Length: 78
Image (tube, rainbow, N blue to C red; front, top):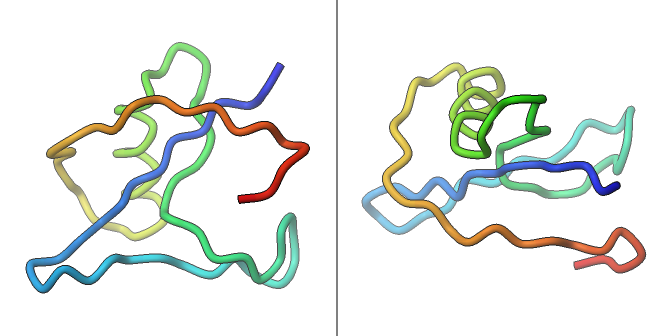
């Protein structure tokens, strides 16, 4: 079964979008990504993305909008 993850697209008033680069050790080293991570059991994607943004960036935020849920087949790369 695919792992469920959630991510945030964070944009400032100037229209700039925040992305981060993964560390060189661990999975997918050096890849660029939006802040986010795995959805824990019993957690909604909305809750997961708020938690992950707080953990990764140290900021509390309010999710203003949600996108549709998408499924990415791990056999393909985006």
